[in-house]
Structure formats: structure tokens, C-alpha cells
Length: 284
Length: 265
Ligand SMILES: Nc1ncnc2c1ncn2[C@@H]1O[C@H](COP(=O)(O)OP(=O)(O)OP(=O)(O)O)[C@@H](O)[C@H]1O
Ligand SMILES: [Mg+2]
Image 1 (spheres, rainbow over the protein chains, first blue to last red):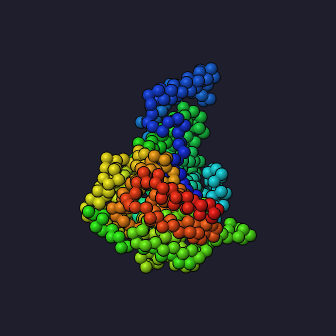
Image 2 (image 1 turned 90 degrees about the vertical axis):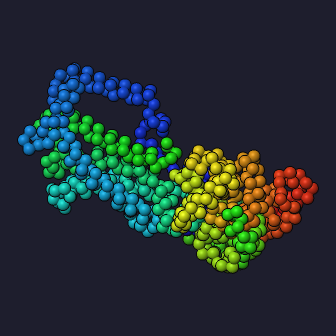
Image 3 (image 1 turned 90 degrees about the horizontal axis):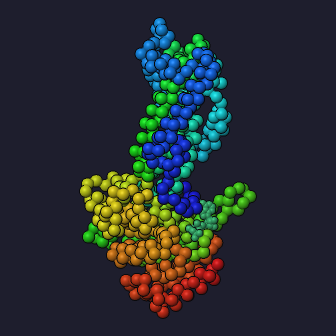
């Protein structure tokens, strides 16, 4: 912590200004007019979809909006597959469980490794290239390997989500810790905090908002890989349901699954955003 | 009261002898930089010393050594006769920017030190609220740093350091980033505080007038490596105020210091 680097004077007092994930122009809560425009955008997209499906007039190619909505509502209580299957909710819960487990573990691992990298240069030089190499690889590319190594149970699915989450978390954590001004840490030390106490209550605390932004990105990444994950011999989960319904040309159900993923994803992101807001007084 | 009782004027003496500090070059070819080469400085307990010097002459390097943020390559840095081995609450540091913790409100910022050191009971809280009163932030105790003005943030940073009852106050161009009016207010505030508590102060500045107004002594440095070029005793009466800057003695001393500083460039 007390390296003898003399940093150039940092002119900012508010340490953290993480990039917004949403495209919204302001950082305050949603205003009425913004909500209205957003709703209009969605309505417009649905309208285009409806027009296209009426033009094409082909269930399999593109079902109409009401048909998709009906399917969605039906399958909230109806099982898929009909025998021994699960409802849309239950599939969502299965996927949620997989993602929850993989994401939490990935967040913990990512913060730990990122913390080490930010404090020990050797570790950083060691891990940096590994991340650069693995980051651009799509989860699908790992599926055969996962099956060879871990079989077809829950383990390969868990590992596949980890592969998506950990690099994002490492990169976010390192960047967040690097951005903490040296003087802030020095201030904590000269106020009497021990090195460990300052590491936790100043360095990590100051980086926390940006780390949460990383957690949101990683959550998004985990959901994008769920379909790939559940290609591995799954018998439940939204990814499995989408795959299976697709093979059987049940397009409305495919679309329902996609909508469900989006709903759950938005709900989780909202929770993380609330968390972010609760720990960052500059955003209240 | 609390502060004046505990901070006695007999502590906080600084003794720096033959201090060496070099910074390694970026590559093997680029030579290292000798920031300080055999630097000596004595500061009496309760003295207000101003360090003045051209940019890059090693003022911040020196202050960082005193604060315990870095270690000298050679020589001795003593505070009250004991070598400095690391940062500590008895040596309060004020940076150019206030460096408040943005996630804590003003009161919690002030209480960071006592809490970090595990001080128990109601005493630290009493001290903190008294100090906030002193620095005029009693109403802003629950406000967060981003809700304070620049001057208020500086005063909060003062309170956060003073709550630890430091014997030595280290300031690195603390008012450099402030506008002229706020800076004058902060200078007056610092003078009042020092009149009351008389802790030892090492104050780094670029501003000749500020140095003459505040200091008991002014150490003009030349770089680089940093050396003491001249030391001026400021024999102006205390308590001082801004009106004094128009007096003949003040102007005369200011010119002497400025000439010495310009010669060191
Ligand atoms: N971390 C560092 N790495 C390399 N060189 C450094 C480092 N810190 C300071 N130096 C060098 O040491 C010398 C003294 O720097 P220092 O910051 O103490 O100057 P200063 O007197 O505080 O200047 P200023 O008035 O501009 O703040 C300079 O030549 C600078 O380039
Ligand atoms: Mg400096």
C-alpha cells in the first residue's frame, strides 16, 4: 500500500464515476417522459413484428404477437414437455439457480483474483495474458471440452458460466482498484488505519461501485451463455426449453422463452442497480 | 478544552539529517533521479514552518518521508526523537485536494480515524462534533462530501485530521486548488486554529505571500536534487491577519524571499 510512488495530484474528490450500463441520458430515476418514450419504442417494435407476421402469414416463421403472448401465458402453468416437463416459471427457476450459483462463485473468484492482481505485480503479469486469450472466446467453443472433462451433469454447466463471469469480474475489479487514488489510501493510513483495515474500508470500498458495475456486466454475460450452457444434456431450464422448442418448430414457445430470459434478466439487473444506489451516496 | 488540553506545545519536533531519496528511472538506460541529496531540516516543536521552492525540488518527497508514506534511502527522519517508520495518526496529513471518503458523511469521515484505531466510547464522538462546530460544519454533519463546497470539504478534512490530536501537521499545498477568496478564508482559519493549539506545522506552498503570512520560518529550497537555499525568520507579530500584508515589513520580507526563490530557479 505504502509504495513510494508520488502520484501526480489528483484533482477529483469524488473517486468513482462508473460507466452507466443503461443508455439513459440522466443518472437520476426514470422521469415520466422517458418512461413514455420507452413504452412507445416497445410498442413500435411490437407493431412492426405484428405487421411482418401478418404479411408472412406463417406460424413457424413468425407467429403473431397475440399468439406469442397467449403461448407465454399458457405455459406459465402448462408443462413443457407435456410429459415430465416443467412450466415456464419452473424452467426459469432452474436457469436462475444455475446462473445464481455460477455467477456468485465467479464474482467471488473474480474479485479475489482481481484484488491479488491489483496488489501484486507478478500475479498481474502472470494472469493478464490468460485473460486476454480467454476473453474473446465464445462459450459455445468450450462445450465439447466441458463434456470431455466434466461429463454431462451440472459441473460442466457451472464451469461454463464461470468461464463467462470470471474474466469480466477480474477485469472490472482490477480497473476499479487501479482507479482508487493513492492519496485516498494514504489518507486512511495516516488517520491510523492498519494496512488491512485500509485495504478493506478504503481501497475496496472506494472501488465497490465500479465492481458492482462489473457484476452487472457479468450477470448479463451469464444470461447470454445460458442457451449454450443448457445445450449440454439438460432436461430443464430456459435454454433447454428454447433449444428443444426450436427443434420442434414451436416458434411461439421459443419466443416466450426469450421473453422470459429478458424479464428475469431485467429483474436481476434492477436488484443490482438498487444495491449500487444504496452504497453510493452520489447517486441518491 | 479537549484539543488544547491534549495537544501540548512541547511535541512534534522534526529533525531531518542527511536524507537521501532517489527515484529509479523507467528503464535501465534512463538514469534514476536524485530527489533529495543530503537534506537537513530542523523544526522546533510548535513551530510553523513553510517550505517554499520551485516545482520538482522535492517538497512533496520530503513531506511523504515525514508522513511515512515512503522511506529514505539514507539519513534520518525523526519526529520527537523517534524514526518515522510508517504513517501514523500523530502526524496528520492534508493533501492538495481534501481526499474525503465520498461514501461517508461528514461526521463519519471525521470519525474514520478513531474508529479505525478501535477507540471506544463516547469520547471520539464528542470530539468530532466539537470539531465540526469549530470548523463551522455543525449543520453539515450528515451531508456527504459531494454536497459540500470546496472550502467546506477542506474544513472537513481538517476536522478529520484534528480529531486524532496530531502533534505534527503536514500540508502539501493544501489551498493550491482554491479560489482567492476561499483561500484567504482558509488561511485565516488555519492561523486561528494554530494560535489555539500550537501544534508543529510543515506547510508546503508555491505562494511567497502565503508563506510569509503563515510561517514562523520559511525554508527556501532549490532543486534538483533538493537543498536548502535559504532560511528566513519571519519576525512579524502574532496573531496575524490579512491586513498585515500591506505593511512595510511584510512587503520587504516578501521581496527578500521572492528574490531568493528566483535565484534558486
Ligand atoms: N514516483 C516518482 N517516480 C520518479 N520520480 C519522482 C517520483 N516522485 C517524484 N519524483 C521526482 O522527484 C523530484 C521531486 O519531486 P517532488 O514531487 O517532491 O517535487 P515538488 O517539490 O513537490 O514539486 P511540486 O512543487 O511541483 O509539487 C522531481 O524531479 C520528480 O520528477
Ligand atoms: Mg509537490
